[in-house]
Amino acid sequence: MKRIAIAGLGKIGLFHLSILRNIPSVELAGLVDANPAVQKIVRGMGIKLPFFASVPDLLAKENVNGVFACVPPAFNPSIAQACIPKGIALFVEKPMAADLEGARTMEALLKSQKTPPANAVGYMVGHSPIFIKVREILKSGELGQIEIYSASILLGEVFKKQEGWRQNPKISGGGAVAVLGSHLLYLIQSFLGMPKTIQAKMTRLYSLVEDIADIEFTHEGFRGNIKISWSEPDCPDIAIRIKVKGSKAELHIEENRVTILKKANGQGQIFYPWDLPPEPCERLKVRPAREGYASQDISFVDSIGTGKKNLVSWLEGFEVQRLIEGIYKSAAARTALAVPQSCYGRTPESK
Amino acid sequence: MEFKVKILENPSANNIEIFSMVPDFQQFVRDTSHYGTTGAAARRILAMPALKKLRLVKVALRHFDKVLKFQFDLLMNLFLMAETSKIPKRRTIFLHHQITDLALSFDQPGLFKIFHQVVSNEFGAEPGLSTLNFKRLTEVLEENKLEFPWLMAPFNPKGYQMYPSSQACLEILPHLRSKVIADNWNLQGTLPDKEVQVFFETHPFAAATL
Image (cartoon, rainbow over all chains, first blue to last red; front, top):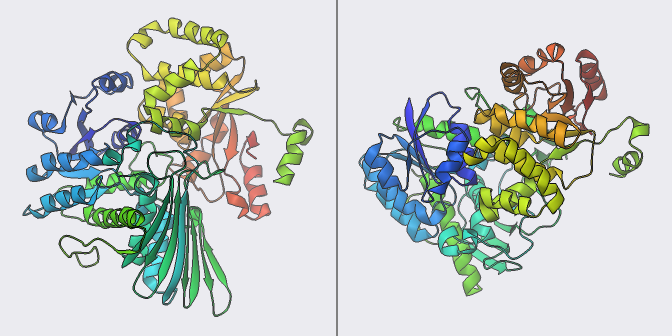
């Protein structure tokens, strides 16, 4: 049995709570939120768990194996500071930190441990069966040499002046790029590796932060164009589209299908979610609606104390943070820039 | 799209009925992102016309102990009443599967009980529950002696989104008094017509979503 705590009980924290309380190998150890009024809301949901104002308070009183940090990204480094030196596993919601410096602090904390505890970042798209299939296809080399790609992540969410912490980049890490686009940036670095240079242009329509970003990545031997927008009309739910053109075939990726078009014979092959192995969440009494979340949480819990690397560990989270930083710097400089250096020269592939 | 518009112009002639579903979940998610969970609900309630707020106050007073304890099952229903007040009157009002499944995750059958009362008594409609956890929902309803006229869940020949398994969901159907609507039954039109036809002939569905 793993004793798990949740820090931050906003929308996403409550969602993780709804999953974790249904995993038979989890014993919930406590809840943390800086706002004491949240305790009443959670108790009203029938959750009678010890409640704390901070993660250090929790760790001083409870024996905990792992923490889910569901707080704005700026607070992740301080939670890591409280957990990692004590060997407590830490899952952080995406992006990993509000800036590259914060992510570097977290990586340094991990590196300072003789046996680093389990760690993960909440890019749940990585656990979605359709994107697992894409990774398989790309790894097989079926596409040949990659020539060019285009990708977009679109959502119709922001159409007027906004309020709240998301409008403060020091806390949120940025606008549409950090909050929404980081999912797509994770997929791109996971599928195609890290680019060498970035050229980005931002547009503000309604927010204090960017609402739309147009980005060009140059990789070794190929390039890609990316569009990120949370102000897309007629797009009530997140829509991810990726097209990859290779020397032998093209790959068209959407959330509900993957199509391979072979150049040699013009034949296509389509994979739908219902043709793929489902998420391994048979241990859950109640399955959440959105794909990826359940297997993400189950695999993080299972990795605690086993030394098993998570699919989206802090290493991958750090690579996404480098891309986010590079995008903001390029947009500010209005020119193409090299991707910020990794602090330790490690890459997910070389680990 | 054109086909859809044409048949919706005269639904009854096409044996089609329009049901409502609350809340508008995508809007709910957007609002909670900006105002927080409580803030989003409070804004929705405050925006209600005064007369409709009275109905909400009546329900809140009936469950005053739950108001004092900030209980989720009641507060969510007050929010749902605010949502329902905005939509045209329909024969049936469904609870969105995200809320049904959240209530299942948090063991909150009281939410279903109050939803049933509110939809029947305050809105004069038939209550329905939509879910992705059909088997678990029917177990919880039975344990709590709750009966809903309508249930809706994914049902298709491939067993997609039928949790925990296709067999587990299908074998419950003949034993239910509720009318069951099959959702996500044609998997974006990828199934052969014959396979779908046999599926519907084999199992006692009351209707299918369009």
